[in-house]
Amino acid sequence: MSSNTDGLVVTVLTAPDEEAPPGLDPLYQLAEVRFAWDADSLRKTLPGTHIMMVTDFRTEALQEAWPSADRLEWIHATSAGVDALMFPELIDSDVTVTNAQGIFDRTIAEYVLCTILMFAKDFPGSLRLQQERRWKHRDTERAQGQRVLVVGAGSIGRQIGRLVSAIGLEVHGIARQARSDDPDFVAVHGNDSLPEQLGLADYVVIAAPLTPATQGMFNANAFRAMKSSARLINIGRGPIVVTDDLVKALEKGEIAGAGLDVFEEEPLPSDHPLWGMENVIITAHMAGDFNGWKAALTEQFLANLSNWKEGQALFNVVDKARGYVPNP
Image (cartoon, rainbow, N blue to C red; front, side, top):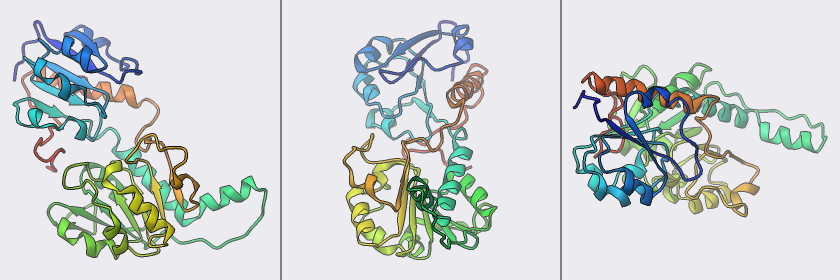
């Protein structure tokens, strides 16, 4: 990996309506910085580019412009998920891919904890009653002792495990391989144990990356395997859940509720039935976003760039065949 920054070219790929990431001033002292926002502009900026910083995690522009990449060595995605980047030509290339693992983990875990407590204490019901100016006493659930299944026991899943176990929930994980000595989970079960574990959980949290193996994982069969009193929380990727199957499971009472931050189609259409369900909590793909998150992403990229300049190993290197950063 080159440590020579003479003539270094960095291309920053943003969404068409997005401003340049904050905090890039140090980069201008180190490299020629180019900006692109779609496939056409990327085809013009890619020739000669050594490094890409991708802030639009839904983009297909890179795949379309890929033939123009003649000197590309490293792509950094400012998101935890890299599914939009995992096209065959990139996977088969020598280009290194890194992601933003670590930036959003804690805030996503806070979101999950908040959602669990909102369900347990029926805050959606209380807010509806408040809007109606109605005083109605109800009993609510205890969160302590409830069983949480985190599907995807990686960096984000680990933070979820730590945080929700701190208030007395029993946290289990699902990963590619089972492990019994994980400090953040009661146990981590293999993927083949998912149907059995779904039937034991009070809360099922999707924290897995979107890969061919996880796409559509939560379908009608998965919902039938869950307890009728269980709630689903998805902070992973929308296409991991078959939305039509989820709607039917909620309508038929096969599961008790859902907290959803990501969807197969985003934005969620205004006429979608999920909006009108009282047992569903909806947010707009914002579980990990906090005040200052964009600047934090730039700082992380610049820290990794420092490693690159010094000839040191990059951190958060994605296994392109798997589509995520493997656990150490």
